[in-house]
Length: 417
Image (tube, rainbow, N blue to C red; front, side, top):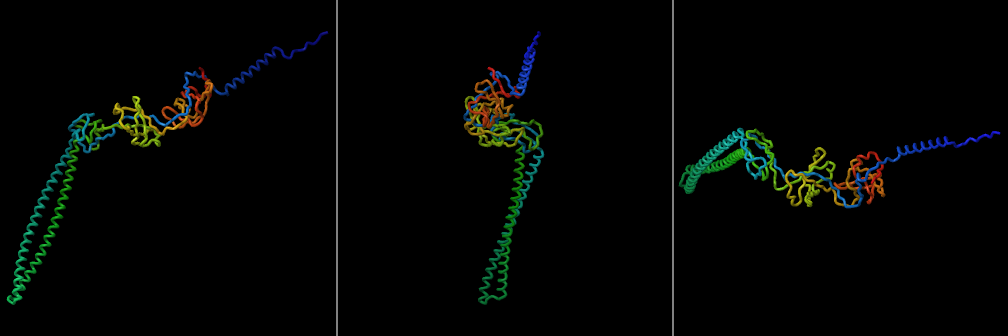
């Protein structure tokens, strides 16, 4: 009798089919996890710059480039125009105050000078003639006055004598009255002449004052004209070096043209260009430093030019004490301007990471040194060497500070030794 064969539940084919399905699911889960999990990047340790976060003294400063300039520059702008006739010195010559640089000619100015001189001489001659006439007139009036005084004296003598005779009834009334009337007439005439002399003196004084004022105005005009003529010879206003001389023999120049400048050589200043971001924090009295040959020199801002050009503004700085003996006009210096006093802060070295992160995050290295992952941070002040960290890190942490340009959107770095 046949016995039915029991069919096996787990056949070899079924087991293989189930195993294949399980492997497919595992693979699918792996792919999903790889796609949606943290992105990682393997980085060789020698291609990274890892720095320690530390607590240390910190002061905010900015690096700037300064150019050595003369302590002051006097520009040579022509006060009078004309034709260049002579040039006495060459560009670059060291000048003393008052030394001639060049001479111009100006025919119109020369004619005006001659005309002004003639006018002054004519006015002087007229004033002298007027004064002579006034003196002669005064002499004549004084002569007439002397005659009147003489006649008055004689009339008084006759009157006094006749009065005595009349009182003694020796002289007739008519003769007495005649002498009295003559005496009174001479008194009145004398009084009138005194007034005439006084008015003449006042009039002569006023006329003399007016003549002198007119003559003085003419003299002042002549002096001004002579000064304008003297300006045709351009002279060095101060001791210094002549630079940028722009003049050729026979060349025509107009008043106001700049023909050069005098650089005062008694000292130097440093003209510095600063980013406009710091315009509210840079002011006169702020100090900076310049280091050369193991010696640090201190500079102080003396003047701030608030006009912004191409995103930058200028300041003038002066050395405190003796400047470096090797500096020369036109030389560039690397200077640090201190924007704050030194204080304790948590700091990290400057690095290329800032360009990609803007200081908003950084890769922090794990304690075992095998990985680095993103952490948010907040950067405060900075100087040429360090950033101040306000939040996100602790002293003793280690961070990656090199450029993140090749990291893209990677969330985690795997450090390979």
